[in-house]
Image 1 (cartoon, rainbow, N blue to C red):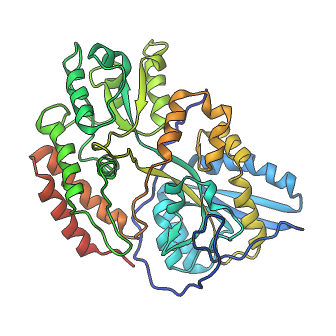
Image 2 (tube, rainbow, N blue to C red):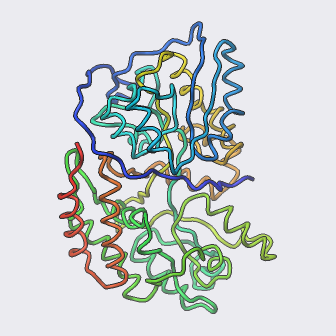
Length: 429
């Protein structure tokens, strides 16, 4: 079965969210605030301009041909946009009034674009309850949804099941204390240098640390402010740091070696997303290791005692711009792209994982045990706050995590500094 090889780019730094007036009203099928009027699919016609980034932009024309067959009077033009220039292109088009009708939008751009009055609120006729809750949350700004989740991904623990077995573990402990003990036990096996790779200091390392905190009951923000200096957050950072102080994880791992060290067994655990399944299996196959898929498995992020695993949810959204002159057709396309059968077809074309929960019932996804586990983890996964400044705050948080790993900074010191920086940066609201 095809495995995801698409590394989802999650966005660049957002601009400050400006104040704007929004009408209140309506509610979606799940009761979440909605302000958009319902759309009609009767007598759709005209042209739609769609922007999409990366590989999705290249593949989307083949998919939307099905929409054009269903609505023959609508013509869809897809413009592929490189990720590295996408944010600037969007901002310039909003300023100039030349936005497309529909676009793929990075999850942390939603607050910025909504704050610029650029996005049309999600119609109340779209059932937002069909999406994974965490993914749906990435579309909401100040309680109003401005788009829909298109595809998703999350983080899980990859582990060499054969080496775990040698260490006396048939299953991965679900509690954080037991998980660390397992990593230490695996490190004692022949050929193993480090029990786990946690990649400190890299951009986005918060995507590993914060799930430990979420799985311990922490919240990193309220509706109005960042809350990075809670006892739960400090405890999670201390837990992360203990892997380095106890020399179970390398504080200075070589870059770009995850596939190599995992397949050779020298580092038999790491935390990452679903795209790594194909990468490690392809790497093993290139080295003459057939059947590597039977030598590893994935497991949920461990939780504190009595807690529930909760990982990071990423992916990308679809939105309709407020300046569209063909609103009904634009939202009809978005709705069509998020029908379960369309999502499964899109997965088959690109390996992008469905944002619609019922699509995961299809055999294309259920037949792969590892992929099904990602689907289960998505049900409790969370997104970072929709504040426009999150990328700046996350970068500051990553810098503190590097100090935790490499300098032994305590969790309390790290989160206090991170909170101070977050307060200085502000939420952008």
